[in-house]
Image (cartoon, rainbow, N blue to C red; front, side, top):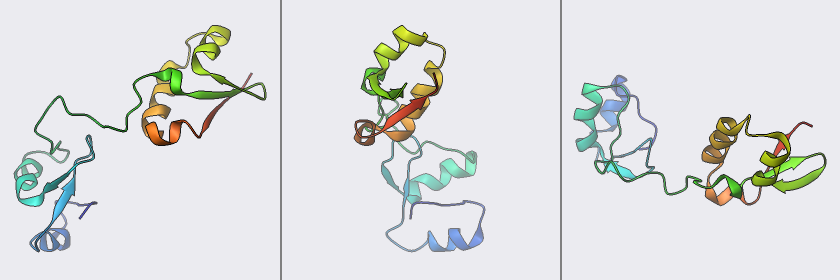
Length: 113
């Protein structure tokens, strides 16, 4: 089913039809709605994946994979840190996780000089 609002009667009705599955917002894996409903009754935001060690397979763990467009040149993040310092590490990490492993190799993060 994908997008689901637990408090919406229309969506709850659609959830009664089989097979209905919901996407875990943290691991991006599909789970039967029957197992998700008790979690959503307890809290508006719920992680459906029971294994706490399992994470997003598309997450970028090494920021050196991020390509930076800086001064009209594409450089690896490691070199950018040597030039400018580590001032925007949190922002670059958020960008990398939002873009994911598949796209990070094809995109450049623009940084002003």
